[in-house]
Length: 223
Length: 406
Image (tube, rainbow over all chains, first blue to last red; front, side, top):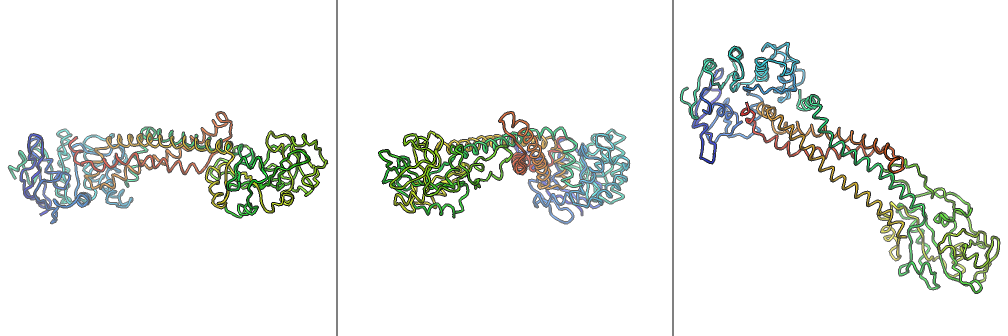
Protein backbone atom coordinates (compact mmCIF):
# COMPACT_ATOMS: atom_id res chain seq x y z
CA UNK A 1 0.00 0.00 0.00
CA UNK A 2 1.39 3.37 -0.98
CA UNK A 3 -0.90 5.67 0.93
CA UNK A 4 -3.46 5.17 3.65
CA UNK A 5 -5.66 7.67 5.45
CA UNK A 6 -7.54 6.63 8.56
CA UNK A 7 -10.27 8.65 10.28
CA UNK A 8 -8.95 11.96 8.97
CA UNK A 9 -10.61 14.89 10.66
CA UNK A 10 -9.99 18.52 9.77
CA UNK A 11 -11.96 21.09 11.69
CA UNK A 12 -12.09 24.85 11.22
CA UNK A 13 -13.23 26.94 14.13
CA UNK A 14 -15.35 29.94 13.29
CA UNK A 15 -17.44 32.35 15.31
CA UNK A 16 -20.54 30.39 14.33
CA UNK A 17 -19.11 27.08 15.49
CA UNK A 18 -16.99 24.25 14.14
CA UNK A 19 -16.88 23.18 10.52
CA UNK A 20 -15.69 19.70 9.62
CA UNK A 21 -13.89 20.16 6.33
CA UNK A 22 -12.91 16.49 6.47
CA UNK A 23 -15.12 14.33 8.60
CA UNK A 24 -13.43 11.04 9.53
CA UNK A 25 -12.26 10.25 6.03
CA UNK A 26 -10.53 6.92 5.39
CA UNK A 27 -9.04 5.68 2.11
CA UNK A 28 -6.23 3.57 0.67
CA UNK A 29 -4.14 4.09 -2.46
CA UNK A 30 -2.02 1.38 -4.04
CA UNK A 31 1.16 1.95 -5.98
CA UNK A 32 0.35 2.77 -9.61
CA UNK A 33 -3.22 3.82 -8.88
CA UNK A 34 -4.77 6.78 -10.68
CA UNK A 35 -7.13 8.06 -8.00
CA UNK A 36 -9.65 10.74 -8.82
CA UNK A 37 -11.32 12.73 -6.06
CA UNK A 38 -14.60 14.36 -7.04
CA UNK A 39 -17.30 16.27 -5.29
CA UNK A 40 -19.09 19.60 -5.29
CA UNK A 41 -17.39 22.84 -4.33
CA UNK A 42 -16.64 22.96 -0.62
CA UNK A 43 -16.85 19.21 -0.23
CA UNK A 44 -13.25 19.02 1.05
CA UNK A 45 -11.47 17.69 -2.06
CA UNK A 46 -8.61 20.17 -2.05
CA UNK A 47 -8.37 20.06 1.74
CA UNK A 48 -7.88 16.30 1.52
CA UNK A 49 -5.21 16.65 -1.18
CA UNK A 50 -3.28 19.30 0.74
CA UNK A 51 -3.57 17.70 4.13
CA UNK A 52 -2.03 14.38 3.08
CA UNK A 53 1.53 15.75 2.96
CA UNK A 54 1.12 18.33 5.68
CA UNK A 55 0.33 21.49 3.70
CA UNK A 56 -2.77 21.65 5.89
CA UNK A 57 -2.38 20.17 9.37
CA UNK A 58 -5.01 17.61 10.44
CA UNK A 59 -7.10 17.90 13.58
CA UNK A 60 -6.88 14.14 14.05
CA UNK A 61 -6.47 10.89 12.15
CA UNK A 62 -3.49 9.02 10.75
CA UNK A 63 -1.78 9.03 7.40
CA UNK A 64 0.74 6.39 6.34
CA UNK A 65 2.85 6.95 3.24
CA UNK A 66 5.16 4.30 1.87
CA UNK A 67 5.04 2.41 5.16
CA UNK A 68 5.76 5.45 7.34
CA UNK A 69 3.33 7.37 9.51
CA UNK A 70 3.51 11.04 8.43
CA UNK A 71 0.67 12.80 10.24
CA UNK A 72 2.71 13.26 13.40
CA UNK A 73 6.10 14.31 11.99
CA UNK A 74 7.43 17.85 11.98
CA UNK A 75 7.40 20.42 9.20
CA UNK A 76 11.04 19.84 8.27
CA UNK A 77 10.48 16.09 7.81
CA UNK A 78 7.29 16.66 5.79
CA UNK A 79 9.13 19.17 3.61
CA UNK A 80 11.82 16.58 2.94
CA UNK A 81 9.19 13.99 1.95
CA UNK A 82 7.48 16.44 -0.42
CA UNK A 83 10.85 17.33 -1.94
CA UNK A 84 11.84 13.74 -2.68
CA UNK A 85 8.63 11.80 -3.18
CA UNK A 86 5.80 14.12 -4.22
CA UNK A 87 5.04 16.15 -7.34
CA UNK A 88 2.30 18.79 -7.36
CA UNK A 89 0.28 20.03 -10.31
CA UNK A 90 -2.02 22.99 -9.72
CA UNK A 91 -4.90 24.49 -11.62
CA UNK A 92 -3.11 27.79 -12.14
CA UNK A 93 0.20 26.14 -13.23
CA UNK A 94 2.19 28.23 -10.69
CA UNK A 95 5.18 28.65 -12.96
CA UNK A 96 7.73 31.25 -11.97
CA UNK A 97 7.20 34.02 -14.53
CA UNK A 98 10.78 35.28 -14.81
CA UNK A 99 12.31 31.82 -15.32
CA UNK A 100 12.49 30.06 -18.66
CA UNK A 101 10.71 26.78 -19.25
CA UNK A 102 13.80 24.68 -18.54
CA UNK A 103 14.68 26.75 -15.45
CA UNK A 104 11.17 26.19 -14.07
CA UNK A 105 11.51 22.45 -14.61
CA UNK A 106 14.92 22.41 -12.90
CA UNK A 107 13.60 23.83 -9.61
CA UNK A 108 12.74 20.50 -7.90
CA UNK A 109 16.21 19.26 -8.86
CA UNK A 110 17.77 22.45 -7.47
CA UNK A 111 15.97 21.88 -4.17
CA UNK A 112 17.43 18.38 -4.10
CA UNK A 113 20.85 19.93 -4.88
CA UNK A 114 21.31 17.87 -8.04
CA UNK A 115 24.46 19.10 -9.89
CA UNK A 116 23.87 21.71 -12.60
CA UNK A 117 24.72 19.57 -15.65
CA UNK A 118 22.55 16.72 -14.41
CA UNK A 119 19.72 19.20 -13.88
CA UNK A 120 19.95 20.42 -17.48
CA UNK A 121 20.11 16.85 -18.83
CA UNK A 122 17.11 15.61 -16.87
CA UNK A 123 15.00 18.72 -17.44
CA UNK A 124 15.73 18.58 -21.18
CA UNK A 125 14.70 14.92 -21.32
CA UNK A 126 11.46 15.60 -19.50
CA UNK A 127 10.64 18.60 -21.67
CA UNK A 128 11.24 16.42 -24.70
CA UNK A 129 8.92 13.82 -23.15
CA UNK A 130 6.12 16.39 -22.74
CA UNK A 131 6.69 17.70 -26.27
CA UNK A 132 8.25 21.05 -25.37
CA UNK A 133 11.85 20.49 -26.46
CA UNK A 134 11.59 23.53 -28.74
CA UNK A 135 10.25 25.79 -25.98
CA UNK A 136 13.00 25.37 -23.39
CA UNK A 137 14.17 28.99 -23.43
CA UNK A 138 10.70 30.51 -23.56
CA UNK A 139 9.22 32.34 -20.61
CA UNK A 140 5.86 31.08 -19.30
CA UNK A 141 4.14 34.19 -20.65
CA UNK A 142 5.22 33.18 -24.14
CA UNK A 143 3.49 29.78 -23.91
CA UNK A 144 -0.14 28.75 -24.38
CA UNK A 145 -2.18 27.55 -21.39
CA UNK A 146 -1.82 23.93 -22.50
CA UNK A 147 1.94 24.32 -22.89
CA UNK A 148 2.20 25.94 -19.47
CA UNK A 149 0.37 23.03 -17.87
CA UNK A 150 2.69 20.61 -19.66
CA UNK A 151 5.64 22.51 -18.19
CA UNK A 152 4.00 22.17 -14.76
CA UNK A 153 3.60 18.43 -15.38
CA UNK A 154 7.25 18.18 -16.45
CA UNK A 155 8.23 20.00 -13.26
CA UNK A 156 6.15 17.61 -11.16
CA UNK A 157 7.83 14.49 -12.55
CA UNK A 158 11.40 15.63 -13.20
CA UNK A 159 12.60 14.47 -9.79
CA UNK A 160 10.96 11.05 -10.23
CA UNK A 161 8.40 11.28 -7.41
CA UNK A 162 6.47 8.32 -6.06
CA UNK A 163 3.17 10.17 -6.22
CA UNK A 164 1.72 13.14 -8.08
CA UNK A 165 -0.91 15.24 -6.35
CA UNK A 166 -2.93 17.14 -8.95
CA UNK A 167 -5.49 19.74 -7.92
CA UNK A 168 -7.89 20.54 -10.78
CA UNK A 169 -5.10 20.29 -13.38
CA UNK A 170 -7.55 20.94 -16.24
CA UNK A 171 -9.58 23.62 -14.49
CA UNK A 172 -8.09 26.44 -16.55
CA UNK A 173 -8.09 24.64 -19.89
CA UNK A 174 -10.62 24.27 -22.66
CA UNK A 175 -12.14 20.78 -23.22
CA UNK A 176 -9.75 19.67 -25.97
CA UNK A 177 -6.68 20.78 -24.06
CA UNK A 178 -8.11 19.15 -20.93
CA UNK A 179 -8.30 15.80 -22.70
CA UNK A 180 -4.76 16.25 -23.95
CA UNK A 181 -3.49 16.86 -20.40
CA UNK A 182 -5.55 14.00 -18.96
CA UNK A 183 -4.22 11.65 -21.62
CA UNK A 184 -0.78 12.79 -20.76
CA UNK A 185 -1.27 12.14 -17.05
CA UNK A 186 -2.59 8.68 -17.89
CA UNK A 187 0.50 8.08 -19.98
CA UNK A 188 2.76 9.10 -17.10
CA UNK A 189 0.80 6.88 -14.75
CA UNK A 190 1.04 3.86 -17.01
CA UNK A 191 4.50 4.26 -18.49
CA UNK A 192 6.30 5.29 -15.33
CA UNK A 193 4.08 3.54 -12.79
CA UNK A 194 3.76 6.84 -10.88
CA UNK A 195 0.77 6.98 -8.56
CA UNK A 196 -1.53 9.93 -9.23
CA UNK A 197 -4.15 11.44 -6.97
CA UNK A 198 -6.21 14.00 -8.85
CA UNK A 199 -8.90 16.31 -7.55
CA UNK A 200 -11.42 17.31 -10.19
CA UNK A 201 -14.97 18.49 -10.51
CA UNK A 202 -15.17 17.25 -14.09
CA UNK A 203 -16.99 13.94 -14.63
CA UNK A 204 -14.92 13.40 -17.79
CA UNK A 205 -11.67 13.77 -15.86
CA UNK A 206 -13.01 11.55 -13.11
CA UNK A 207 -13.41 8.73 -15.61
CA UNK A 208 -9.64 8.58 -16.02
CA UNK A 209 -9.28 7.26 -12.50
CA UNK A 210 -8.65 3.61 -11.78
CA UNK A 211 -10.01 4.36 -8.30
CA UNK A 212 -12.58 7.01 -7.55
CA UNK A 213 -13.37 8.83 -4.32
CA UNK A 214 -16.44 11.04 -4.10
CA UNK A 215 -16.70 13.50 -1.26
CA UNK A 216 -19.64 15.46 0.04
CA UNK A 217 -19.62 17.63 3.16
CA UNK A 218 -16.20 16.33 4.08
CA UNK A 219 -17.20 12.67 3.95
CA UNK A 220 -16.41 9.99 1.40
CA UNK A 221 -19.75 8.86 0.12
CA UNK A 222 -18.50 6.63 -2.69
CA UNK A 223 -15.22 4.77 -3.06
CA UNK B 1 19.77 26.18 -11.00
CA UNK B 2 20.24 27.08 -7.37
CA UNK B 3 18.41 29.35 -4.95
CA UNK B 4 21.22 31.91 -5.35
CA UNK B 5 20.88 31.81 -9.14
CA UNK B 6 17.13 32.23 -8.75
CA UNK B 7 17.79 35.42 -6.76
CA UNK B 8 20.18 36.81 -9.37
CA UNK B 9 17.81 36.01 -12.24
CA UNK B 10 14.92 37.66 -10.41
CA UNK B 11 16.98 40.79 -9.74
CA UNK B 12 18.17 40.93 -13.33
CA UNK B 13 14.73 40.39 -14.85
CA UNK B 14 13.18 43.06 -12.66
CA UNK B 15 15.75 45.81 -13.02
CA UNK B 16 13.35 48.70 -12.53
CA UNK B 17 12.34 47.34 -9.13
CA UNK B 18 15.98 46.81 -8.30
CA UNK B 19 16.77 50.46 -9.08
CA UNK B 20 13.86 51.65 -6.93
CA UNK B 21 15.01 49.46 -4.07
CA UNK B 22 18.56 50.72 -4.37
CA UNK B 23 17.70 54.39 -4.58
CA UNK B 24 17.00 55.14 -0.93
CA UNK B 25 19.95 53.24 0.44
CA UNK B 26 22.33 54.65 -2.17
CA UNK B 27 21.27 58.23 -1.53
CA UNK B 28 21.52 57.73 2.23
CA UNK B 29 25.04 56.36 2.04
CA UNK B 30 26.02 59.06 -0.47
CA UNK B 31 24.91 61.82 1.92
CA UNK B 32 26.90 60.30 4.80
CA UNK B 33 30.03 59.80 2.71
CA UNK B 34 29.83 63.33 1.28
CA UNK B 35 29.34 64.94 4.71
CA UNK B 36 32.06 62.83 6.28
CA UNK B 37 34.55 63.44 3.45
CA UNK B 38 34.09 67.20 3.68
CA UNK B 39 33.86 67.41 7.45
CA UNK B 40 37.01 65.39 8.07
CA UNK B 41 39.01 67.74 5.89
CA UNK B 42 37.52 70.87 7.41
CA UNK B 43 37.95 69.43 10.91
CA UNK B 44 41.59 68.83 10.12
CA UNK B 45 42.01 72.32 8.80
CA UNK B 46 40.58 73.79 11.99
CA UNK B 47 42.81 71.52 14.06
CA UNK B 48 45.85 72.51 12.07
CA UNK B 49 45.09 76.20 12.28
CA UNK B 50 44.55 75.97 16.02
CA UNK B 51 47.67 73.87 16.49
CA UNK B 52 49.58 76.55 14.67
CA UNK B 53 48.53 79.13 17.26
CA UNK B 54 51.06 77.67 19.69
CA UNK B 55 51.23 76.04 23.12
CA UNK B 56 47.89 74.92 24.41
CA UNK B 57 48.65 72.87 27.54
CA UNK B 58 50.20 74.13 30.74
CA UNK B 59 51.70 71.84 33.37
CA UNK B 60 51.88 73.72 36.68
CA UNK B 61 52.92 72.63 40.18
CA UNK B 62 50.08 71.26 42.28
CA UNK B 63 48.44 74.18 44.07
CA UNK B 64 49.69 76.81 41.64
CA UNK B 65 47.23 78.90 39.71
CA UNK B 66 47.64 80.34 36.25
CA UNK B 67 47.80 83.75 37.95
CA UNK B 68 50.84 82.54 39.91
CA UNK B 69 52.44 81.58 36.66
CA UNK B 70 51.83 84.93 35.05
CA UNK B 71 52.59 87.13 38.07
CA UNK B 72 55.76 85.12 38.77
CA UNK B 73 55.83 85.83 42.48
CA UNK B 74 59.06 85.13 44.32
CA UNK B 75 57.51 82.30 46.31
CA UNK B 76 55.53 80.73 43.45
CA UNK B 77 55.78 76.93 43.63
CA UNK B 78 57.91 74.95 41.19
CA UNK B 79 58.03 71.43 39.80
CA UNK B 80 60.99 69.16 39.02
CA UNK B 81 62.71 69.51 35.65
CA UNK B 82 62.71 65.67 35.45
CA UNK B 83 59.05 65.82 34.49
CA UNK B 84 60.06 66.85 30.99
CA UNK B 85 62.05 63.61 30.72
CA UNK B 86 59.10 61.70 32.12
CA UNK B 87 56.83 62.99 29.34
CA UNK B 88 59.51 62.36 26.71
CA UNK B 89 59.99 58.78 27.88
CA UNK B 90 56.28 58.01 27.98
CA UNK B 91 54.33 56.55 25.07
CA UNK B 92 51.85 59.41 25.05
CA UNK B 93 51.07 60.51 21.50
CA UNK B 94 50.15 64.02 20.44
CA UNK B 95 52.84 66.05 22.27
CA UNK B 96 54.49 68.16 19.61
CA UNK B 97 56.75 70.35 21.63
CA UNK B 98 57.58 71.15 25.27
CA UNK B 99 58.89 74.37 26.75
CA UNK B 100 59.92 74.10 30.39
CA UNK B 101 60.47 77.49 31.95
CA UNK B 102 61.35 79.11 35.21
CA UNK B 103 59.90 82.54 35.79
CA UNK B 104 60.58 85.02 38.60
CA UNK B 105 59.99 88.72 39.09
CA UNK B 106 63.39 90.40 39.69
CA UNK B 107 64.69 93.94 40.10
CA UNK B 108 66.82 95.64 37.46
CA UNK B 109 67.85 98.87 39.06
CA UNK B 110 64.60 100.26 40.38
CA UNK B 111 62.52 98.55 37.70
CA UNK B 112 60.65 95.29 38.15
CA UNK B 113 61.27 92.79 35.36
CA UNK B 114 60.06 89.21 34.79
CA UNK B 115 63.05 86.99 34.13
CA UNK B 116 62.18 83.78 32.31
CA UNK B 117 64.54 80.88 31.82
CA UNK B 118 63.88 78.94 28.62
CA UNK B 119 65.32 76.01 26.70
CA UNK B 120 65.99 77.81 23.44
CA UNK B 121 65.57 74.86 21.13
CA UNK B 122 61.99 74.22 22.14
CA UNK B 123 60.83 77.69 23.06
CA UNK B 124 60.70 79.53 19.78
CA UNK B 125 58.67 76.83 18.11
CA UNK B 126 55.84 77.31 20.53
CA UNK B 127 55.66 81.02 19.90
CA UNK B 128 54.53 81.65 16.36
CA UNK B 129 54.51 85.41 16.94
CA UNK B 130 58.28 85.33 17.43
CA UNK B 131 58.79 83.87 13.97
CA UNK B 132 59.08 87.32 12.50
CA UNK B 133 62.04 88.12 14.75
CA UNK B 134 64.51 86.47 12.41
CA UNK B 135 65.69 83.90 14.94
CA UNK B 136 67.16 80.94 13.10
CA UNK B 137 67.82 77.30 13.80
CA UNK B 138 66.78 73.80 12.85
CA UNK B 139 63.27 72.97 11.75
CA UNK B 140 61.08 71.08 14.18
CA UNK B 141 59.90 67.56 13.72
CA UNK B 142 56.36 66.89 14.78
CA UNK B 143 54.79 64.11 16.75
CA UNK B 144 51.38 65.26 15.71
CA UNK B 145 50.87 63.24 12.57
CA UNK B 146 47.67 63.66 10.63
CA UNK B 147 44.93 61.24 11.50
CA UNK B 148 45.59 58.10 9.50
CA UNK B 149 41.98 57.68 8.50
CA UNK B 150 41.54 61.28 7.57
CA UNK B 151 41.71 62.92 4.24
CA UNK B 152 45.23 64.27 4.02
CA UNK B 153 44.73 66.14 0.81
CA UNK B 154 43.59 69.35 2.44
CA UNK B 155 46.21 71.42 0.67
CA UNK B 156 47.40 73.17 3.84
CA UNK B 157 50.87 72.88 5.28
CA UNK B 158 51.61 72.36 8.94
CA UNK B 159 53.32 75.58 9.89
CA UNK B 160 54.79 74.03 13.01
CA UNK B 161 57.14 72.13 10.78
CA UNK B 162 58.31 75.36 9.25
CA UNK B 163 58.96 77.16 12.52
CA UNK B 164 62.55 77.62 13.43
CA UNK B 165 64.05 77.03 16.81
CA UNK B 166 67.17 78.81 17.86
CA UNK B 167 69.79 76.21 18.58
CA UNK B 168 71.59 78.05 21.30
CA UNK B 169 71.18 80.89 23.71
CA UNK B 170 74.55 81.39 25.32
CA UNK B 171 74.84 81.84 29.04
CA UNK B 172 75.57 85.53 28.74
CA UNK B 173 72.86 86.18 26.17
CA UNK B 174 69.27 87.19 26.62
CA UNK B 175 66.21 88.12 24.58
CA UNK B 176 64.18 91.12 25.62
CA UNK B 177 60.46 91.65 25.15
CA UNK B 178 59.53 94.81 23.27
CA UNK B 179 57.94 96.51 26.26
CA UNK B 180 60.76 95.79 28.72
CA UNK B 181 63.29 96.87 26.10
CA UNK B 182 61.45 100.11 25.71
CA UNK B 183 61.13 100.63 29.47
CA UNK B 184 64.81 99.85 30.20
CA UNK B 185 65.98 101.47 26.96
CA UNK B 186 67.64 98.25 25.85
CA UNK B 187 69.05 97.76 22.36
CA UNK B 188 70.58 94.87 20.45
CA UNK B 189 74.11 94.06 21.67
CA UNK B 190 73.47 96.25 24.70
CA UNK B 191 73.98 94.99 28.26
CA UNK B 192 71.62 94.35 31.14
CA UNK B 193 72.63 93.48 34.72
CA UNK B 194 70.31 91.07 36.48
CA UNK B 195 71.10 90.07 40.08
CA UNK B 196 74.76 90.83 39.52
CA UNK B 197 75.09 88.94 36.23
CA UNK B 198 75.72 90.75 32.96
CA UNK B 199 73.64 89.63 29.96
CA UNK B 200 74.10 90.68 26.35
CA UNK B 201 70.81 91.52 24.61
CA UNK B 202 71.00 89.50 21.40
CA UNK B 203 67.50 90.26 20.19
CA UNK B 204 64.62 92.61 20.90
CA UNK B 205 61.53 90.50 20.31
CA UNK B 206 58.65 91.86 18.24
CA UNK B 207 55.60 93.06 20.08
CA UNK B 208 53.13 90.22 20.66
CA UNK B 209 50.56 91.92 22.87
CA UNK B 210 51.12 89.24 25.52
CA UNK B 211 52.91 89.01 28.86
CA UNK B 212 56.01 88.02 26.87
CA UNK B 213 56.46 91.69 25.90
CA UNK B 214 57.39 92.47 29.50
CA UNK B 215 59.86 89.60 29.95
CA UNK B 216 63.57 89.04 29.64
CA UNK B 217 64.40 85.55 28.36
CA UNK B 218 67.64 83.82 29.25
CA UNK B 219 68.97 80.28 29.18
CA UNK B 220 67.03 78.10 31.66
CA UNK B 221 70.19 76.65 33.21
CA UNK B 222 71.57 80.15 33.89
CA UNK B 223 68.30 81.37 35.36
CA UNK B 224 68.06 78.31 37.64
CA UNK B 225 71.62 78.96 38.83
CA UNK B 226 71.02 82.69 39.23
CA UNK B 227 67.80 82.16 41.21
CA UNK B 228 69.30 79.21 43.10
CA UNK B 229 66.39 76.98 42.07
CA UNK B 230 68.35 74.10 40.54
CA UNK B 231 66.48 71.51 38.40
CA UNK B 232 63.14 73.17 39.03
CA UNK B 233 60.79 74.94 36.64
CA UNK B 234 57.69 77.07 37.10
CA UNK B 235 55.76 75.42 34.32
CA UNK B 236 56.00 73.26 31.25
CA UNK B 237 54.21 74.67 28.21
CA UNK B 238 53.17 71.95 25.82
CA UNK B 239 52.02 72.09 22.25
CA UNK B 240 49.56 69.26 22.11
CA UNK B 241 47.70 68.06 19.07
CA UNK B 242 44.17 69.39 19.40
CA UNK B 243 42.82 66.07 18.18
CA UNK B 244 44.90 64.28 20.82
CA UNK B 245 43.63 66.66 23.51
CA UNK B 246 40.05 65.91 22.62
CA UNK B 247 40.88 62.23 22.76
CA UNK B 248 42.27 62.32 26.30
CA UNK B 249 45.83 63.69 26.20
CA UNK B 250 45.24 65.70 29.38
CA UNK B 251 44.24 62.72 31.46
CA UNK B 252 47.20 60.76 30.13
CA UNK B 253 49.51 63.56 31.23
CA UNK B 254 47.81 63.70 34.62
CA UNK B 255 48.42 59.97 35.01
CA UNK B 256 52.17 60.29 34.59
CA UNK B 257 52.42 63.61 36.46
CA UNK B 258 50.10 63.01 39.40
CA UNK B 259 51.36 65.85 41.63
CA UNK B 260 50.87 68.55 39.03
CA UNK B 261 48.07 70.58 37.64
CA UNK B 262 47.57 69.97 33.92
CA UNK B 263 45.40 72.57 32.28
CA UNK B 264 44.59 73.66 28.78
CA UNK B 265 44.72 77.11 27.37
CA UNK B 266 40.96 76.94 27.17
CA UNK B 267 39.74 78.85 24.19
CA UNK B 268 42.01 77.18 21.69
CA UNK B 269 41.29 73.67 22.76
CA UNK B 270 37.62 74.05 23.51
CA UNK B 271 37.02 75.50 20.04
CA UNK B 272 38.62 72.47 18.48
CA UNK B 273 36.87 70.02 20.76
CA UNK B 274 33.52 71.68 20.16
CA UNK B 275 34.10 71.55 16.41
CA UNK B 276 35.02 67.88 16.57
CA UNK B 277 32.05 67.03 18.76
CA UNK B 278 29.63 68.98 16.60
CA UNK B 279 30.77 67.20 13.45
CA UNK B 280 30.57 63.84 15.20
CA UNK B 281 27.07 64.60 16.47
CA UNK B 282 25.86 65.72 13.03
CA UNK B 283 27.26 62.56 11.46
CA UNK B 284 25.73 60.37 14.18
CA UNK B 285 22.31 61.96 13.77
CA UNK B 286 22.55 61.49 10.02
CA UNK B 287 23.60 57.87 10.49
CA UNK B 288 20.62 57.16 12.74
CA UNK B 289 18.17 58.85 10.37
CA UNK B 290 19.60 57.03 7.37
CA UNK B 291 19.59 53.72 9.22
CA UNK B 292 15.86 54.05 9.88
CA UNK B 293 14.88 55.62 6.56
CA UNK B 294 17.04 53.18 4.60
CA UNK B 295 15.92 50.20 6.68
CA UNK B 296 12.23 51.07 6.32
CA UNK B 297 12.66 51.69 2.62
CA UNK B 298 14.41 48.36 2.01
CA UNK B 299 11.94 46.59 4.30
CA UNK B 300 9.07 48.08 2.31
CA UNK B 301 10.66 47.00 -0.95
CA UNK B 302 11.24 43.44 0.27
CA UNK B 303 7.72 43.25 1.72
CA UNK B 304 6.24 44.34 -1.63
CA UNK B 305 8.43 41.73 -3.30
CA UNK B 306 7.28 39.05 -0.87
CA UNK B 307 3.62 39.86 -1.54
CA UNK B 308 4.17 39.89 -5.27
CA UNK B 309 5.79 36.46 -5.06
CA UNK B 310 3.35 34.77 -2.65
CA UNK B 311 2.38 32.14 -5.19
CA UNK B 312 6.01 31.48 -6.00
CA UNK B 313 6.87 31.09 -2.33
CA UNK B 314 3.87 28.81 -1.79
CA UNK B 315 4.82 26.66 -4.77
CA UNK B 316 8.43 26.41 -3.65
CA UNK B 317 7.33 25.36 -0.17
CA UNK B 318 5.02 22.78 -1.75
CA UNK B 319 7.85 21.39 -3.83
CA UNK B 320 9.98 20.91 -0.75
CA UNK B 321 11.78 24.20 -0.18
CA UNK B 322 12.28 24.53 3.55
CA UNK B 323 12.09 27.82 5.45
CA UNK B 324 15.83 28.33 5.27
CA UNK B 325 15.55 28.40 1.46
CA UNK B 326 12.99 31.21 1.71
CA UNK B 327 15.24 33.09 4.15
CA UNK B 328 18.12 32.63 1.74
CA UNK B 329 16.05 33.94 -1.20
CA UNK B 330 15.20 37.23 0.43
CA UNK B 331 18.20 37.84 2.66
CA UNK B 332 20.58 37.16 -0.23
CA UNK B 333 18.61 39.70 -2.22
CA UNK B 334 18.93 42.19 0.65
CA UNK B 335 22.65 41.45 0.88
CA UNK B 336 23.12 42.15 -2.83
CA UNK B 337 21.13 45.39 -2.48
CA UNK B 338 23.23 46.32 0.55
CA UNK B 339 26.55 45.73 -1.19
CA UNK B 340 25.43 47.49 -4.36
CA UNK B 341 23.91 50.38 -2.37
CA UNK B 342 27.09 50.73 -0.32
CA UNK B 343 29.36 50.84 -3.37
CA UNK B 344 27.11 53.18 -5.36
CA UNK B 345 26.55 55.37 -2.30
CA UNK B 346 30.28 55.59 -1.66
CA UNK B 347 30.99 56.50 -5.28
CA UNK B 348 28.26 59.14 -5.47
CA UNK B 349 29.06 60.56 -2.02
CA UNK B 350 32.76 60.78 -2.79
CA UNK B 351 32.05 62.36 -6.16
CA UNK B 352 29.76 64.90 -4.47
CA UNK B 353 32.45 65.66 -1.86
CA UNK B 354 35.19 66.05 -4.46
CA UNK B 355 33.07 68.25 -6.73
CA UNK B 356 31.26 70.30 -4.09
CA UNK B 357 34.00 70.49 -1.44
CA UNK B 358 35.94 73.34 -3.08
CA UNK B 359 32.74 75.31 -3.79
CA UNK B 360 30.96 74.85 -0.48
CA UNK B 361 33.81 74.68 2.03
CA UNK B 362 36.77 75.95 0.06
CA UNK B 363 38.70 72.75 0.60
CA UNK B 364 40.09 70.06 -1.64
CA UNK B 365 38.54 66.64 -0.95
CA UNK B 366 39.97 63.41 -2.25
CA UNK B 367 38.50 59.90 -1.93
CA UNK B 368 38.90 58.22 1.45
CA UNK B 369 39.07 54.57 0.52
CA UNK B 370 38.38 53.21 4.01
CA UNK B 371 34.91 54.75 3.72
CA UNK B 372 34.14 52.21 0.98
CA UNK B 373 34.42 49.42 3.54
CA UNK B 374 32.31 51.31 6.09
CA UNK B 375 29.72 52.23 3.45
CA UNK B 376 29.30 48.62 2.38
CA UNK B 377 29.15 47.34 5.96
CA UNK B 378 26.64 49.99 7.01
CA UNK B 379 24.54 49.55 3.90
CA UNK B 380 24.46 45.76 4.32
CA UNK B 381 23.47 46.18 7.97
CA UNK B 382 20.59 48.51 6.94
CA UNK B 383 19.44 46.17 4.18
CA UNK B 384 19.52 43.06 6.36
CA UNK B 385 17.86 44.77 9.31
CA UNK B 386 15.10 46.12 7.07
CA UNK B 387 14.52 42.75 5.35
CA UNK B 388 14.52 40.52 8.37
CA UNK B 389 10.87 40.91 9.35
CA UNK B 390 9.35 40.63 5.83
CA UNK B 391 11.53 37.57 5.24
CA UNK B 392 10.42 36.01 8.52
CA UNK B 393 6.80 36.48 7.44
CA UNK B 394 7.53 35.04 3.99
CA UNK B 395 9.04 31.91 5.53
CA UNK B 396 5.92 31.54 7.69
CA UNK B 397 3.44 31.73 4.80
CA UNK B 398 1.00 28.87 4.63
CA UNK B 399 1.91 27.14 1.36
CA UNK B 400 -1.69 26.29 0.56
CA UNK B 401 -2.64 29.99 0.45
CA UNK B 402 -1.17 29.69 -3.00
CA UNK B 403 -3.82 27.21 -4.07
CA UNK B 404 -6.70 29.17 -2.62
CA UNK B 405 -5.84 32.03 -4.94
CA UNK B 406 -6.30 29.80 -8.01
